[in-house]
Length: 122
Figure (cartoon, rainbow, N blue to C red):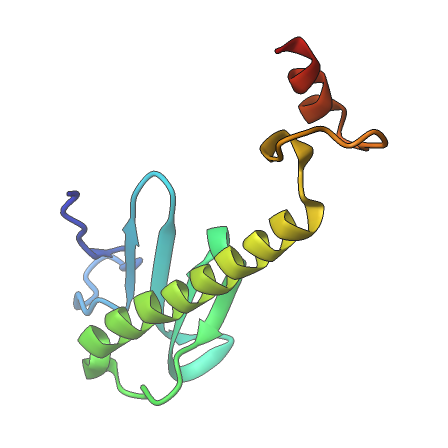
């Protein structure tokens, strides 16, 4: 199991006191970012995960810089919720599509050339 770590990705000016306000956690499949006091939501924590189409969303109930641990947890929890929604929608789309590749017999008027051509080759 991978050991995931949040990394400080804050941009610092030379000589500026180092107070982390931007964080990221990532692997091959996802990148979740977290930022405090973003220009779109001043005085709040925001997160993003482009893989889940979450672009700079505020984290409700967290309005202090010292709530970084809670913000990290909430960002991941909100991403998990979004991933669950995505999985549910994909499952519904799959069920509605009913690709004949996964059925016992091909349907005569199948619009899916790939699965029916695969079945013919068997």
